[in-house]
Length: 158
Image (cartoon, rainbow, N blue to C red; front, side, top):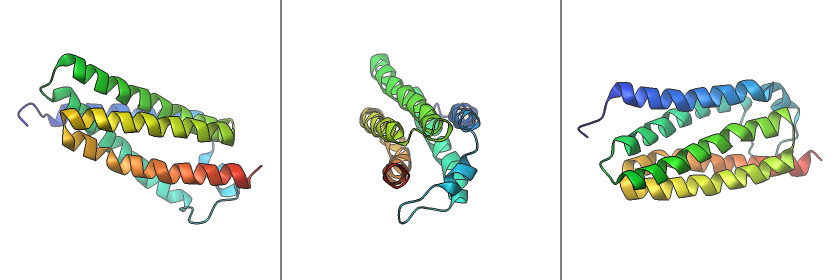
């Protein structure tokens, strides 16, 4: 891709990473709370989240950057990036709802809405740049794991 720039991709990935870091800061003692919760079967160890999430945020940022530089109608790019921004915002709110407020039922609904937004984001991205959509696939799959875990935590910790 002619217009691809490492600097541009890094800035876009940095925005996604900073969003995740700010959400983590505002959500409070995640590892401590996670360790105290009754977990459903197959729950991953707490340290894995600290490895997986930064990778996913980097992939998300690169995907958004690819859409930004893809030659396409401005309206199509605007809709795609709107869904990206919306899902990033809902992603930001989920950990605050789950960890800070410990509203496990509400966080299930937030995560369901996030999955819908990521689905739309991937569909719109796919129409403009298939690689961008594929870069969101690990994120989508991880969200399905998070959804399972969130439902389990909600049911087991009432």
